[in-house]
Every structure is written in C-alpha cells, then in structure tokens.
Length: 227
Image 1 (cartoon, rainbow, N blue to C red):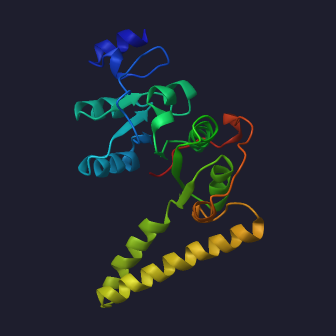
Image 2 (cartoon, rainbow, N blue to C red):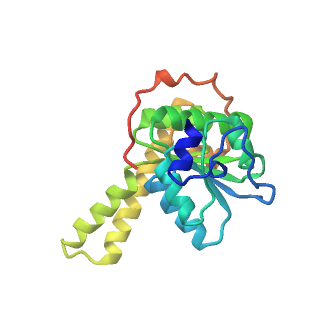
Image 3 (cartoon, rainbow, N blue to C red):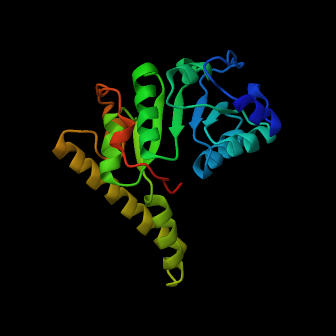
C-alpha cells in the first residue's frame, strides 16, 4: 500500500530510505548528515550547498522529501534514529550531524543512536530550555545551542537600532550578552559536574560521557518544536 501511494504521488521508492533499500553513499567521506529538513535543516543545507560541502539529509515527512528531491538534493525518507538508516547514509564516514527533528523524543533518540553506534560523528542540536539541553548532552550531543538565544539577540539588535545607538555599540552589547550567557551556563556546568552549558564546556574539555540506556520515546512530551 505504501509503494502504491508513493507511485501515485510521483515518488519513486528509490528516493526513500528503508533498511532494505540501497543508495550510493560509497563516495561520501567527511560529509554532514542533516537529520530533519524543516526550516533549520533547509537553511543548513543551503549554506552547505553554497560552500560545496557534501551532505545527506533525512526526514520522515514525504512533502519535505519530495521538495528536496525536486531541488536535486540528497534527501531521503528515513528514520534518523535508526542504526540501519544511519549506516546507509555513511554515518561511519561522516564528520558531523545536525539534528533538528520535530519532537524532543526523536531528537534525543537520534543523538543517542549517533553517540552509541557512530561515536566518530560530532552531533549539534538546539535545545529549547536547560532541562532539554541536559537530556541531550547526557544522550551524547557534542554541542547543544540555545534555541532562542540568537533569534532573541537579533530582535534586541533591531530594537536597539531604533534607539539611535551606533551599529558598533549594538554589536558590542550583543557580543557581551552572548559571552555572559555562555559563561554563566559553563559556570553552572562546572558546579553541577555535568556538561550543562549547551555543549560549550563539552567542546572545550571533550569530556567523556557514557551513553545512557536505550531511550524510551514515551518518556518525552511529544510536540512540534519551533524550528
């Protein structure tokens, strides 16, 4: 039934990644894996394409996959948290992965799978709050960035510009705030003995963290993250 639906909608099976499908990834080396092709994934894909950086993307929404394939991108329908699917996109030869999926559980599961089965891959992901960031770092994320920090700073910059402040002064104020924010998180990280700090301390110290037991998807509150 799934194949019939795909053919009916003009989407050939070879565009979709399941453990039984095969795709050409032998030539991929030191590439990036984009897990999730929402707005964040699309922006990252555009930036990588402009710099001719090799990447492959995964998503479980057929409309996103169809859109990416129409643009000639290496985008496949597949579960980014699946060890088999990650193997098929050459995760053992990849250098990094960015994870921007549609639910906290899916994000956690993908970070966990990459950390456990493909420790060579550095994982980068957004978190919507400190608790979420802690869970992701415990799952093995290399770096977790605050989801709202940069958009908030951009908004603050626009507001400050209306106060007739010089552009350089605005840039300095935003840089200082960004530095203080990361410094406070790193301080909290050192006090708590974990990698809290949205990955900042983890990257600096390259701390070794043992993967947790396999995550229970039901443990997380499902929902769509603002990406």
